[in-house]
Image (cartoon, rainbow, N blue to C red; front, top):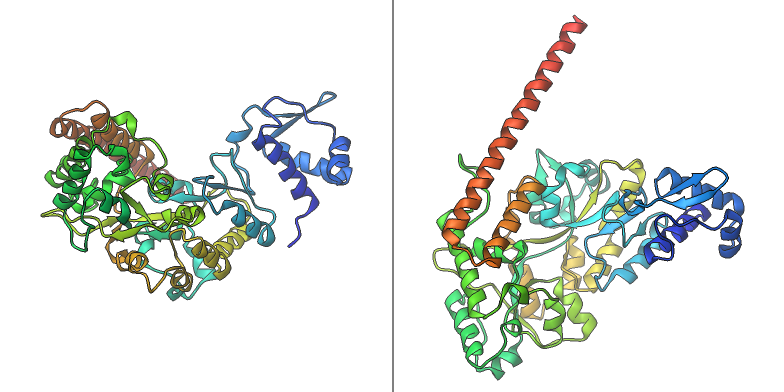
Length: 462
C-alpha cells in the first residue's frame, strides 16, 4: 500500500510535534511553505491541516494563521498507535513493517493514549471498559481458533467480551548467569528448587560483599511481587468469595513477607531499585533475574548468551504458579473506522507479523506456528517457557484503575516506610473492602435508575 499525501502530511506535522520541533502554542508555517518543503500540493496540505484541526491538534484563527493546541498530546487520534513502551528494541523494524501494510496508521511517542494500543495485562484488566469487544472481530477474521494458544486469553474475558487480544505472552521464570554463580561459589539452581535454596545463594553472595543490586532484580512493581504471592498460594481479590479481599489472607501475607525479607537480605534501600535490570543482566552484571521471555529481545540485540533458566523457586505450602506476562492488542471505543480495526487485528495476528516478533525473541507469539519457529527446541533453557505455560495466571481480579492504584501504592508504601506488614496489610484490606462496598452501592443505584427509566419508557409506549 502507498501512503496517501494527506496521511503523509499529517504524519509530517505529528512527527514535528513529537520531536519537539513544534510546541504547544507555536504558529505553523503557511500551507504553501509546507507544500514547498515536502513536495505535496497546497490542496493536500490544507486538507491535512483541516483534519488535524478537527482532531484538536491544531487551531486555525482567522487572519492570524494555524497554531498548535497547547494540550495537543491529550487528544486521542484515530490513526495513532500507542505502545506501552517506546524503548522496545524491535520498534524500528516493526514500524517499517506497519508502514508497508497499513500506512495510514503511525506509532506515536508522545500521545499517552490512542485509538489503537498495545497494552499490558493489568492495564487492560483495569481499563477494560474503555475498549471495544474484539471477540466479533477476532471471530470474523480467524474462525479457526486452533491457530492460536487459548490459555492466555482466559483472563481477558468479562461478560463474554474480549477487551484485548494477546499479541505475545510468557510465563515468568528465573534467569541466572551460570558464570557469576560459579564465581561466587553458588550451585546452579535445578528443577524443583526451593525458596530456601534461593535465599542461601543470595546470602552467600552477600557474605562475599556482592552488592544486592548485582544479585537479584528486586522491584516494588506488582508484576514482580505478585509472582511470590501466587507461589505462596495467595491472591489479591477472589472472584468467588463472599469476602473477595485477600490482601490480608495469611498466604498472601506470607508471600509479601518472603519478598520483604529478600529486600533486607539484599541490603537494599527502597531508593536503590529503579533501573533497567534486563539490560543489566544482558551486560553480565546480574546473577538472578525474575523475568519473562520478552527479556530475550534485549539479550539478542546485546549479543549476550551467558544465561540459563529455571522455574521460580517453590514455596512450602504454596502453589506452582507464575504470573502471566501479556502484551495485548486493544482498540478504544471511540474508534470511528470498523474496517481499520479489522486491518489492525489482521496485521497484528498475521503469520508475517507474528513470525517477525518471534524472530526478535520477544515473548511467545500467540500464533502457534510462529511460537514454534521462535523457540529453540534443542535448548532446555528456551523450552522451559513452553513447559511453564500451563502454570501461568493473570488472576489479579482487580476491577478498576482506582482499586489497582490503591493496592499497588499501598504495598509500595509498606516497603517505602518499613511498616509492620500484618498491621499495614490489614488496614489496606479494610480500605479496599470499603471501596468495594461504595462501588457496589453505586452500581446498584445505577441499575435501579436504569430499571426505572425503562419502566417509564414502557408506560409511555402503552
